[in-house]
Amino acid sequence: MKYIEVDEELYRHIASKTERIGESASDILRRLLGLSVNTVEQTEPQAISQPSLEAAQPESQIVLPVQATLVSAADFNQLVDEHRLSLQKGAVGRFLFLLESLYQQSQESFSQILLIQGRDRLYFARSREELLQASPSANPKEIGSSGFWVTTNNNTAKKRAILSEVLAQFGCDAQVASTIAERV
Image (cartoon, rainbow, N blue to C red; front, side, top):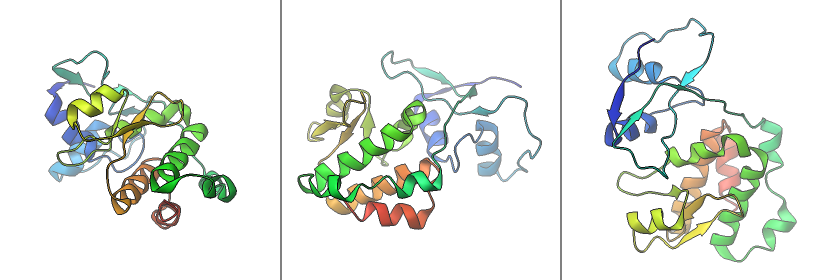
């Protein structure tokens, strides 16, 4: 296998096209270019890896092993503790609570949320400052004590859309994700 380096903008574009956890950069590019996707199992799964946000580097190596932990369907259904959710203050509180619940279930692979972003907007980061640098009006909040931060100044519909995308990133069925996101 060959390794390539790409600039940050191209890296984020390729990463945003990921359709499933553990999808390799080669598979993503093959799909985007209309080439046949390899169906032969690799001995070591290869996938796009999130670059370190603490050490901003101009280029990111994109073909690195990933150790993602998928959340089971049963775990998604248990994500919502109705009583504790009802104690949260407003849409922001419910949004943060659901993200924190997902973090508690999949701490090892939670960093993949950093791949989820808008066309011109950063939704998740490893620090408050990073979100504020991207948008001074982001109103960043930490997701529990996870060390991950999320922009909270979106309207409720956008919060629901972001949560649905996060759940899908973790392998949640679209219908279940939509049902959970409606709780925001």
